[in-house]
Image (cartoon, rainbow, N blue to C red):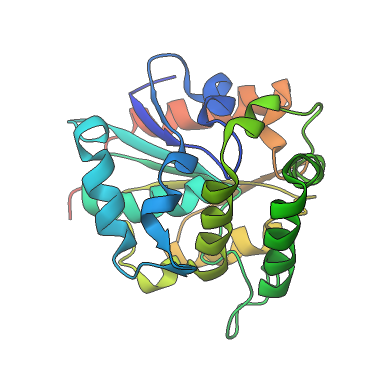
Length: 235
C-alpha cells in the first residue's frame, strides 16, 4: 500500500479489520473509543467534529497522510478530511447520513436504531451477533464484546443523528467503495455520496463488509495505490 493511512473502523468492530487493505504501517483508530465524548445525554453534540479532531489530531496529522474510513468510520473520516487536510480520502460503505431524513431515502429508519438500543441493554451479545451477520462477516468477532454497552449505545445515538452533508466537503481527491448487497448502508447511499462529491464509486459484489473477500482486497489495494501515485492538481 502506497502512503501512510489514518484508518477509522466501524461501530462495534475493531479498526484493525481493515488491516488487509491498508497494511501494518498505517494508524488504526477505533471509533468505539470516542462515542461517549461525541454523544451525551442521548444527543449528538453539535460540535462533534471539533471534539473528535482535538482527540485524534496528534496521532492523525502529518505531511503526506491519507485518511480512510469504513461504515461509521467513514463519517469520522469525512469530517476529519476537512480539518486535517489529508492528501487522499478513501470511504468504504459510506453515506452522507446513516438514517433516512428529508429527501434522502437510502438509510435506516431511526426507529430501527431505537429498537436496537433497547435490545442492546437486554442482550448485548445477541445484538452484536445479529449486526455482524447482517454485515456479512464469516464468523463472530468476539472482540466486540469488549466494548461497553454505554459506548455502543452512544454510537447508535451518533448514527441516528449524524449528517455529514451539513459539513464542508472534503477538498482532497476521494475514492469511494461499496458492496452491492449491503444490508446496513445501501449501495445507493454510496452513489448519492459520489454524486455529491463529484467522485467515482466502485461497487463490488458483497455486503457491508465486502472487503473481506481476498479478490476484492487486491482490487481495492491496486486502486488506492494507483490513486496515491497521482499528484493532485493545484487549482
